[in-house]
Structures are given as structure tokens and as C-alpha cells.
Length: 67
Image 1 (spheres, one colour):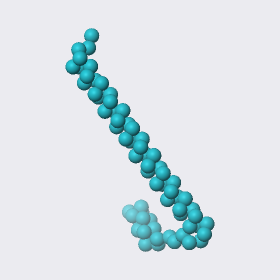
Image 2: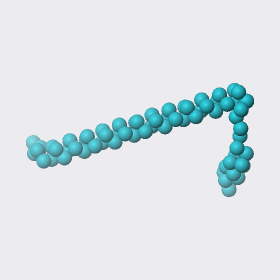
Image 3: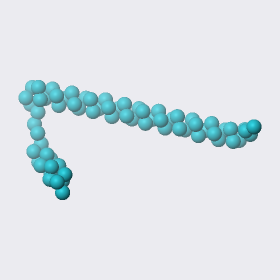
Image 4: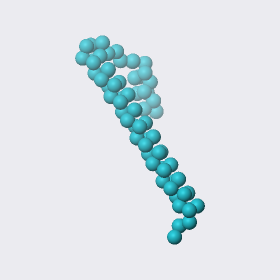
């Protein structure tokens, strides 16, 4: 039989783990929504012909990937 002290400790750990998982899920959902919003915005700019490529940032990223 589990004494009340050990049982309370185990319950506390289970609750903390559940809270951590919920926070991580909410963070992932928020990031996905922000990403979807950004993708939609870029797609609209491409469709309208107003999207501008940052050539300096692109060149830097390509050069960094080659090193």
C-alpha cells in the first residue's frame, strides 16, 4: 500500500507533467498559426507581384551553407 506522502508526491509529478505537455502543445499551436499567417501573407504578395526577395540575406545564407 502507498502511504499518503508518496502518493501525494506521485500525483504532483503527474500533474506537473500534464501541465508541461499542455504548455508545449499551446506553444506549438501558436507557432503554427504564426507560420501559416506568414505563409499566407507571402503567397498573397507573390500573387500580387509585390513580393521582394532580400538578395543580401539570400546571398549570405547561400554562402554560409557552402562553408
